[in-house]
Amino acid sequence: MLNTDLSFYGQQTDERILYVARPHWLSQIILFLKFLAGAGIVFFIAVIVGEQGLIQKYAGQFGIGGGIIAGIIVAIGLWVFENSKQKNIAYITDRRVVKFEASTPFATNMRSLNWEEAVKVKTFPPNFFWKQFMIGTVIVHARTTVASLDSKVRENIVTDDDVEIQNVYFYRDLGNYIEKILFLYKKQPKDIAALQSFIPKEKGKRY
Image (tube, rainbow, N blue to C red; front, side, top):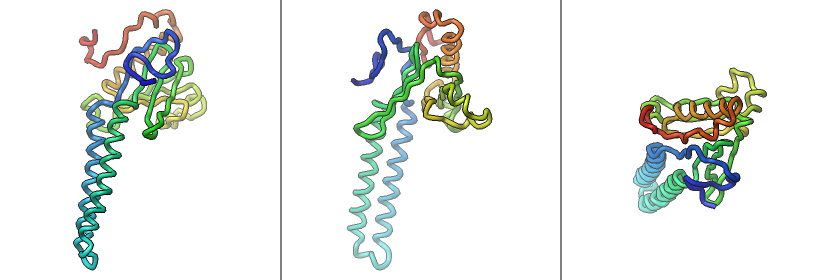
């Protein structure tokens, strides 16, 4: 089953999708540019090495080899880029948070955390640059993580029970939205049915 904005693999009967989080396009572009830069460096080094000293007569072979390796790096970058768009996706529903992440060209890992087991949300930008574009990371901590780790340690720890969503647009607002879901789920569960979907826009422009 192909995950879409309307349904996903393993979706439960009557489970309502409140938000679909995909990696922001800017993060995807920068990721591909890193692969492209790496390919360029490999090719440049191969050409320079081939033209130096005793191996100068093999300059052509080094250039070809460097070009092949650079091509492989670019191909991997394209695969990562396409999979980032199509397979790396997270769902915020009225019952849980679900994350899909491509591990190989043929396999996609799935991680799910029910709101009953979720107790804390953490949001942060990976750096100052991403903060300016309101792109960051949202971590939903499980009860087991909070119970088993010291408070000073767990802030920087993501266990297998937690769900980490990276490169999220309006990451702080989404974190606040998830906090609201957790409150309603534990205190006013009947009100979740009336909860509106999250819209990644500035306050006052979401509805």
